Image (cartoon, rainbow, N blue to C red; front, top):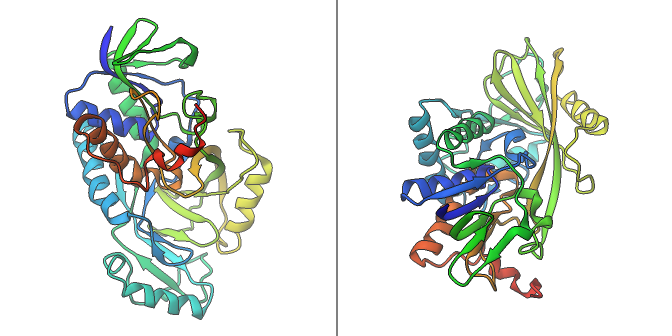
Length: 351
C-alpha cells in the first residue's frame, strides 16, 4: 500500500491535518488506538479572551478566522450541527474587576467580543453580587460528536486503522518511510499526551495537565449561556451542564478521581445554589507546552517525520490554523511561524 501520508493519532490535531490532506487530494492512512481522549472530554469552547486577566488569547483573531469556517465546512460535509454559539457571562468578584473589564473593552482586539455594559440581571440560583461581564461571538464545538463522525467517515473509506502504532516497525528512508506494508512520503505524529513514548519527538518539553469535568442535571438552572467563575458551567441543552475543569500536573492517569470531583463540587457550589445531580464524571490529559504554543514542524534529522501536537486548552481554535501551517510548510515550503515551530526546541534534541 502506498500513500502520501501516514497520520498517527486522530484527536483534533489529526482531524485537522487529515481534513487539509482531503481538501488537497492527498492520500493518507490514519492510525488511532483511542488512547488519547483530551479532545473528547474537552469543553470545546472557543473564546479569544483570557477571562482571568481580560487579555487577548495569543493569535486568537487569526485562529478564529480559520477555525470558524473550518467547522462550518465539517457541518456541511456531515449535515450535522457541531458549532453552537454560546455567550459567556463572567462573574465579577469585585468592583476592581469591573473596572478592569471596562478598560479591556476598549482594546481593538477585544472590542468585538466584550460587551461594555455591566450585566446586573439576577438569575435564579446564581450568586453574582457584582454582576457579570458579557462576551459575545463565542461558542462551543461538540468535539465528541465531530470526532465520532469523522472517525466513522474515515473507517467507511478504509482510511482508519484502529490499532496502536509500533515505532520500532517504522523504517526511515531518504525520500519515504515504510511501516509494515505501507509506504508513505511522510508521517505526521498527532498523539497528544502520548508524545513522551515517541522516540523521535520525546525530546520536546510537553507538560501534560490532567483535567476532570462533571456533567450535571440542574432543572432549575435556567441559563443559556456559559457561566465563568472559579469553574465554568456550560449549557448542553435539556437542563444538562458541563462543569470544569481541574488542572493536575502530577497525576498522569486518565481516570476520574474523587479528589477531582470534590474540587469541582466545592467550586461549583460557591456560586450555584440550585439543586443538581451529577450524571457523568470524565477526565483527560491536555497536551500542553511550557510556553503555551503548539508543537509544529519537521524532525531536525529525519525530514519526512513531522509533528502536530501541544494544542493545550484551546485545541478547537489552534488545530485548524496549526494544521494549515504544517501542510503549507511540507507541501508549499512556506516557513512556519517561529512561535509555533519546534525549531525553538532544537537545542534539546541530542540526536
